[in-house]
Image 1: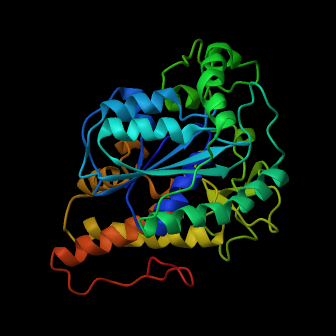
Image 2: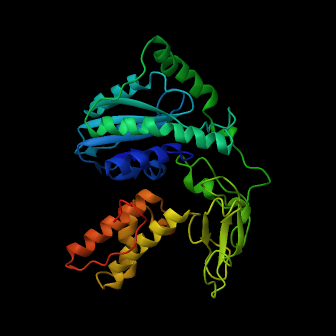
Image 3: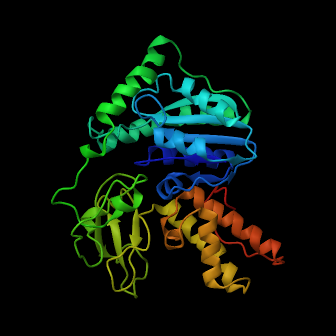
Length: 358
């Protein structure tokens, strides 16, 4: 199993890449930390922990959660840390945590990702961030190969690394790791997302703004970072006789990401997706829908099954928000369910060319 903690998406991206390559289940610990859930987690023999780097160590909130949580079946643990420049001597402390849990320590990998601690540093622009993410690909692949073959990950060591992750970490946490550096100004739309996702419940909403639909200035393309524009599907759909409206990337058609809205509203049915992801989501929905259209279960039970599969609240269990990894998981698990229940002729739906979901 791959478990991850992510504040802005860097570690989430790395974790999804690793889980997809290893065909392992993926668990986000943010919700568990937010709710104080330290119940048992069934992992299998190999556990991969993907986390960001806070002052050359894994976040203390993560090490606390790992220390209190029982990982049933786990024997080996690898750590993969995303960072802006380096992880120092984090492996020294990761080893101690592994030993405390009675797990065989298999080392720590460093993955350079776009800087995101905006309280102290400037985040790179979209183009530079893309290059950094692309450059991380080989390092992620290297970590995957080591984990797949049961090999240890090589980590930085030496006095300098130990100093960064030791004394400097203590000073850095005391001086800089504070919620006070972040605040909302008059541009806040009152969407409440920051309140929902903060794992430490540090954010509260006062005098919430009322709004209708969605402020489309807040919707941006996940591929190029450009704002999304609300427009008719004319010229994009072959036949738009239903007068469908879409949020479309401003750079369309160079960037072909878009998502439709619920009829009669400005609320998107999911997140913007390019052609490949739209096709994959459609395929996932077709397989998933068979769970209740075939009479195997009610529609309500099917969505509860989906929520359990995604380790997400029922309100968040929507295929329109899934990335490639989870779409493939839904397709595969839906097919297994249909076959298991005696549906010998499981319908085959079109998938993207070369897709692993077929």
